[in-house]
Length: 572
Image 1: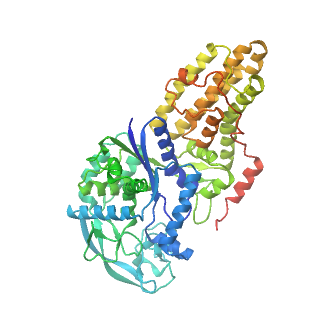
Image 2: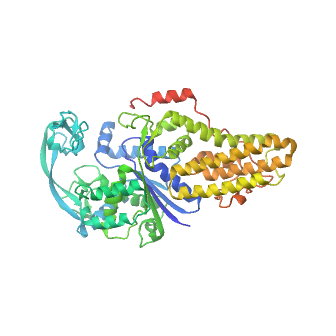
Image 3: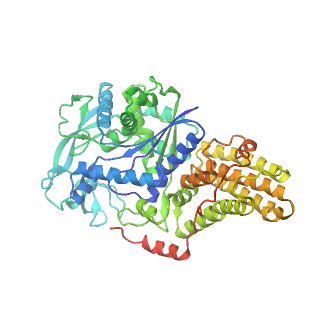
């Protein structure tokens, strides 16, 4: 039994995420966690909400709530949606937890002890009316290059020129609209990533099995232009983890908090500690997952994320861990994803373009979305959600192939042979050939799942479903029963057993349908089908089964047209 640690990028607290966010991290991580559990491994699957930074403060202000209350409410909203999508986290934590406060301050203290933190005095824009320093993105004005009047303090979206806030003409605060701005000097802490460049590069070079997408992004940040840069890890904000050296004050840093991108990945560790706390366990229970001197030496650690998060997880978070000088677990495999686009454009949270996770669950059960998203995961390139494609995949793969097989077998068996597995006949050449074919296909499926080749795994699973349909069509028990009733019984006995096998194999992708199939077979034995010839005989003659409700309904053309119009507009 292997020990598998899985984390998916933690979603930001300010609002409900769209399907592109879901397929870029949490959903494939859940697929892998479910598969690894199904194979008998010990799995720890951790996620959380990312709750610090200016966007959280602004979203709370917009909602008219204290930021702590807003984050607590939105955490529960996101947790409920995660349950709706059957995301099987062992713990869904919060980056604002006391565990994360303590660990973030601990890491900062260790980095300082090791000479990897430097203080930098810099001039930043201060809004007198807002009473705060403004991050670059919260300053807008006219671009000096093209004249665009809504350029941000870091970049003009119109001409793409990189800017400093002081470059803007007539700058104003996007929080209040105030033009009462001035430059003030402030001190911040920087993590000296450049001092760790050689260690980071050697570590990345050792990961020869990582996806090209992951390593190419990491190498670009390491070597392009001026190469890896030191990175600010503090901010002048009210909401966040107060700057401390471990549990001691940090002179000159009073009133400052750690930058959200410093504390957010540390929440993976803190979230595991939160899991231990929630289950009444001691520190040893979570340390065995994260400290190589306390049991984590045999853990394999997998991370899942969209490509925009790769630099932080291949450079900044590893720099924190390596720089601490302590025996923390580093990631072994980082699975990154490209973007899922929406119907000819991009998903847009601000414009409400595309399907958001709560909306998706309001119109169809989670299995429909899980199947489409995973079978079209943006692995080698960006992929695109279209309603035509979604309708086709649901109707053909789920309804016509899997649902049709389960329905035909169970209804025919009940009407012609009763409500228990029939006893007659022996398996012949047709059945032997199917068992051999499925045995080979299951091995291929396992290979793709272990390698996290999500689309290939989905295609192989569909092929396994198709093989059952083709067998049923060729065997034609509805015809055989008229002339060779015992042979028809053997055909149906095999087919009922195949439904149980389909439930086990399909569970990582479509857990609700898998549970329905298994329940219909009157069984709770989820043992992985290592040997098809044994698994195909697991339900003995005389074992009771039932006819399940329709596993999947088809999406109508009218629904497709309605949804396409409904989700093209602005979300309020």
